[in-house]
Image (tube, rainbow, N blue to C red; front, side, top):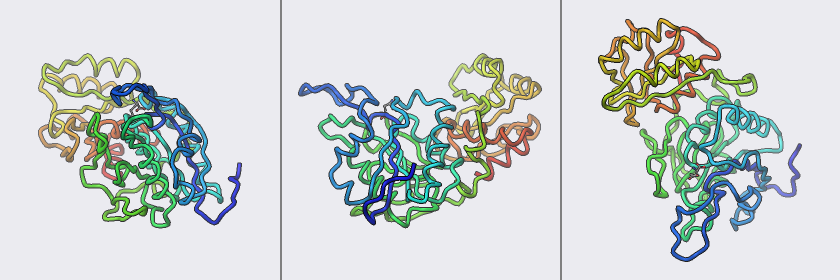
Length: 338
Ligand code: GLU
């Protein structure tokens, strides 16, 4: 449905999905800001609670989901991506803001970055504290997200994450603190920041996204199953075997350091590969590339390295890739490309 237009301000569609930004807490004085329920405040009420939003953009809020973001499934990701693509295709929408829980925000942002074929600004934001907390961060994050989505310089940069005055690329950003409001960081640095109500840019991503991505949510019904197994001392084969038994087409091995593999797992990996399960070597460290054929013979074991993608994003990229390719060389090429 077209959005009603009443002004010459940029027209921003706001899609609410829940999370702490839509959370409400315990009212008593002294209650910790962590004592709250996520996903209870509507997208329309979030907008109404932020004075000044109406000066930046004409907003149309819709409530697509109202969930804690830990409950996101691949089916919900696809639903959201299709809705965002639909909104971006409307001539009377200039940009989209998605409000989202912070726990899986980086995964959803990356999925949209790869599957929504639009150059219009798409910005995700959330909050580390509910609106009822003494120093709630949601209202400022929402205001800044809308300022970025409404700005003409924000298009064509891929999906953006605005948190705590920083503008991150969905390709790189990750939640790196469980509690602080400056919880998000990008290993190569943020793209820019929000300064006096407008974006100021310092970097751009070089890898393809949105209009140049080969993936399109509109063409996908479901994602192949891909699991992640994180390394720790005394690593055992059972989690890998369980993923294979569940029908996983690939397993992301979130290894130590440079994606290293304990000796005891090598025959396990060989066995899984012989059954057709792909192994994607990633790192549990959170930054830095995994180097092909270093410390592990990827050529001999027909495994793949994730380049510099963190394990949750490597899962999504592997799943998308496996909708189009099936051999390890082609899967590796997808990781070099994106
Ligand atoms: N687990 C909740 C979520 O991700 C709350 C965390 C948050 O939004 O900050 O939706």
